[in-house]
Length: 437
Image 1 (cartoon, rainbow, N blue to C red):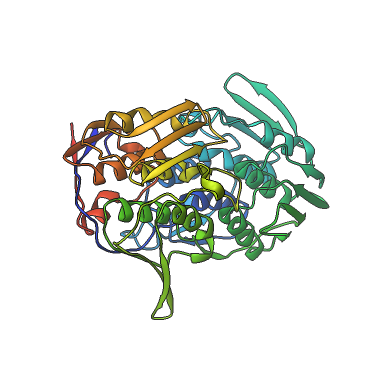
Image 2 (image 1 turned 90 degrees about the horizontal axis):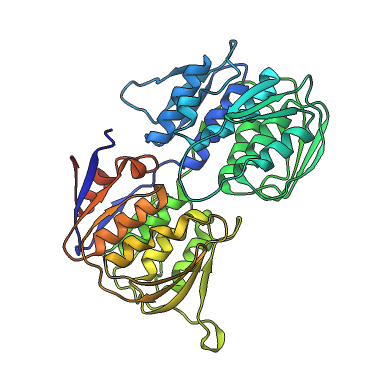
C-alpha cells in the first residue's frame, strides 16, 4: 500500500453490526520468529494480513527460510520451513521498518550461536530500550559487542541460568525464552512478561517439544532440549483490536456484536471501560463466545471513592495494556466527567493529543506521561495524522464520532497493525474511504 494514502472519514454516524477480530499482531510476530527453531515445517493460521506481518515474512525469506502459502488467496495461513542453513544477520533495510524484528535475535542465536541485530525501527512513541535483551543474552553465556548500527551477539554454547530481568519487557522475555530453549540445562526467567502473546509463544514452543513451565506467571522455568519438531498453531484473537471496537461502538452510539473475542483476556479492558460508563455483556452463540456492546451507554465516568478524580494507568499484564492508552484517552473525551490518563511506559505516546485538541477535545497534557481529560466534548472533523499504530486507530475512532469530514494522513501506520480496516468498518456502516494523494 502507498504511503501517500489518506482516509476520508465522514463522522457522526453510529456503527452497527457484527465483526470478528483479526489475529493478534503481537503474537504473530514472535511466533513467526520462533518458527525458525523447528527442524521440520510448521503451519501458522489466523495471521493478520497486515504490513508488519508482511515485513516479518520478507525478513524470514531474506534469511533463507522457505515460506509458502498453502492457499495463494489466503495470506492468513502460512507454512514455514527453516530446515536448511540460514543467515545470521537480520537485514538492516527491513529491520529499520519493523520493531518486531528484534524477536528474531533469540531464535537465530539459539540456532546459529551468533547473530547481528541491527537497531530496530517501529513506532516513535519514546525510547524502547534493548538493555533487557542484552542482559538476558549475556546471562545465557553470550558475548555482546555494541556497534553504532547494532549488536553482535555470539556464544560458543548457551547454558542455562537464573535470570532476573530488570523490567518485564515483552520482547526481551520472548527473546530470552527462545534462546533458552536450546541452552544446556535449566533456565529460570524471573520478572518475565506474562501477556497472552507471551503465553501463546510458550504454548507454541511446547507443542514442538520445548519444556517450559510456569506459563502465565512471571517466573518461567525452561529445560533445554536438542531440537524442536513440527506443529500447527492458530494465532489468538487480537484483544487490543477488540478493545478498539468496544470504544468505537460506544462513542458512535451504535450496537456491535464481536465474534469469538477471547473473553478471558478482556477482563481488565472491560473493567476500565465500565468505569467510563461503557458496559458490555458476553453470551454464547452456537457454542461460541460473543461480546455485545449495546447502543444505550451512559458514557459517564465513575468517580473513585469519596468523589476523587479517577485515573487510567497502564501496567504489565494483567494490568491495563499500554497499547490501549491512546484509545482510552479518545474514549474519555466523549464521557461525562474528568479523568487522568497515565501512560507509564513510553514518554512520547501521549503527544498525539494535540490532534485531538485541534478537533475540540478538552485535554491538559501535564507531562509526557500524564493527561487530564474533561468530557464530554463534541469533536469536529479535521485534518489529522497517524503518528503510530495505536494512536492511528485512536484518531480513526475520534474521526468516526466527530461531526463533519476528517482526513487522516499517514494511514500506512494504521495498516501496519489493522487488516483491511476501512473495508471492515464500511460493513458496519462507517463512512470511510481510502484515497491516494
